[in-house]
Length: 166
Image (cartoon, rainbow, N blue to C red; front, side, top):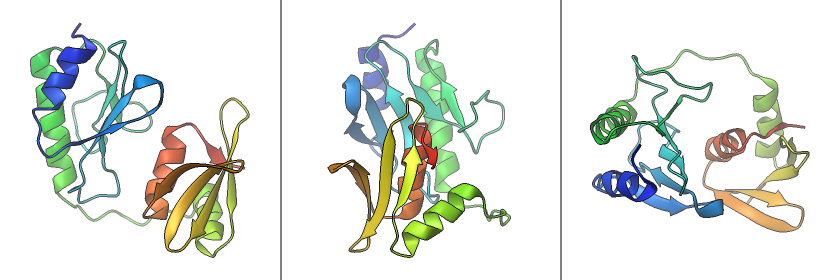
């Protein structure tokens, strides 16, 4: 198994990825030129060596329900190939079929209309998604958690963190 430092060194060889430090020493890498709403290529690379790479648009990879591949046991070659494939898949926009409006979309629609929507987490936490001044704010009580440019980015973050509309 590659160490955190070895994985980080490989990931940082991709100049199109932007490093974003997140909680608990974890690191995300975003691909800002993505043709999709999805911008996270490397998700929660942890100092213990675990982490995930987005492969939701790829065939031939075993992904979780969010489209991520666990890279804990990946070799250097496998990691490079997966990241390269992920970036390539996010570079091309393929039209998607319209999907029915889910409860999540309905909650977000309420926030889009200027109302706030509440989201519940796996450990009973609550976050509020609120639109203010053309940005999307995620609050934990009175504390600002994150800010996003689009509702899709905010919803993606909330879903990746295990939150669902309350």
